[in-house]
Length: 292
Image (cartoon, rainbow, N blue to C red; front, side, top):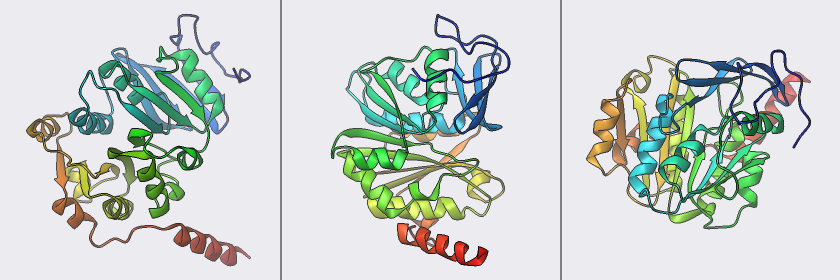
């Protein structure tokens, strides 16, 4: 257990594992806020909404997490074992959901902020090891350290502010994820993007190059470039989105969403090029020269 960080309203947790009234807390990467609402707790990190923990673990308040669940639940039966890796732990909302729906799941959540990981363990009634381990570390470094064919699902929900760090979007990173996945494994990401959809198109191109099957989920306004928001992108060598229930459930959500599969998904990405580590290094060098 790490040292207790200073906070400004309460002791950060009760002995029964649930939060008290919430408040603002210092963490390694800045600060977080825990806010009680009518159905659970909202976690903000450095002022940005990060996670919502519902009183019922099978209820997901964030739309993109429901889209995650649709893709995973199509592939994994309730009684089937599941090896899941969560890149970006935050409040472990998806891990808590999967533990409830798939009780035999073995999960690891990677969280870069050790203080936040400690708070989340204190606050919420999360499954314990071996059902859920929270590993403090850098998501890319953890992926590159794992054994091949050791995970059935990898979920990426890593953000620094409004966007995912570029080093976790490249061809080389996706290749590392694919190595870790089982042959029919599933890689799903939450991509935050602006109306120009530049990032989402590039990420779709990168994932589409790595996997035989590609799926994209987003609402119509997002896909038409009318607003900033979330795009869920998934890749697998097994077929995706085959159940008619998925499209129906997506349309019936509080924000109706569209499912683009394979040809449609690749058409969305065709004008973009996959990102590479070398591109990031070149961009960093240009930035350094410009500031000299």
